[in-house]
Length: 407
Ligand code: MLT
Image (spheres, rainbow, N blue to C red):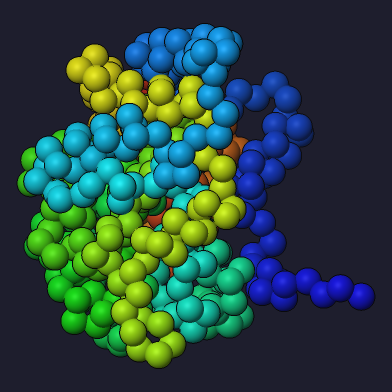
């Protein structure tokens, strides 16, 4: 009989957010009259910016006419989008990133899950704890770990993010090859300073490691001192891949568009010890397994970079940051220490006891869904993540209900 990929057996039964969805659905089924407010998964609620909607309509009309119809697009994405990304997201910040170093995709989740394929099976991987579960689970699937022992997979170097280090992990004490970093962080909302990122870049250079830098939440940065991209750090081109998404920037969670930057100067070693550029490997992977993002969606993404688009997406992020401020202020009033929510849409609340128990309390007593910190890793125990992605009305109502339950 054909055999399965045994590494899947090592995974927890279900993906964190699928698990939460199931628990919430069971509660709703048992309590059909209860209203539930979801501040769990970071899914946006506000409509697409009008510039994106107009671009989608216009592109749909182009698809309706023989003269302007489009079939398969270019492998790395349309030049009009990659040019806009390179100019606005990188060159405007002094980062020397060229359009042909950008790969447009249908999501940062897919990219961060897929990119590990271009590295060797025995790559030593460092992953923060707590962490967006995709980084870890995809390395488990690929066979880079042993079994889960007490909430930690053998073979992974965990980078603890705790109250003691301000939720920004220290450099590993042992050599690693591949380092996952995410700032502004999911789930903690912590941000990394220029000096902290520079220390990681320096580490990667010294150990000839590669950093996978997930900056899906950069649009929420308001502190001018905080870097938006790892490429703002000198030398990062030679050690880092960056992942970005339009999901949170412009409400594209259901529209799907993102991109990954693989600089042409970034190399890793082959089995013979020769330096091999990573760009052609990712190009080969994407052109073999992926057929691009639809033309209308790429047009909608490009519209974000117009003057109007920039104003509209800024206002969208400001709206969610307004929710985040309300959540932070309320938690402090309730006596719950928290971080995040200032340059990030997530608030990481230190609830001081079992995070699944706190999740159950909020669900059953307040009808509010949060994300239990333990679901993001051992260091998440005692915490919950509250997402600012919802309407103002729902956030306000959720906070009132939480206040009543915690009284
Ligand atoms: C989250 O809630 O962590 C995010 O929505 C997950 C994602 O972006 O895939």
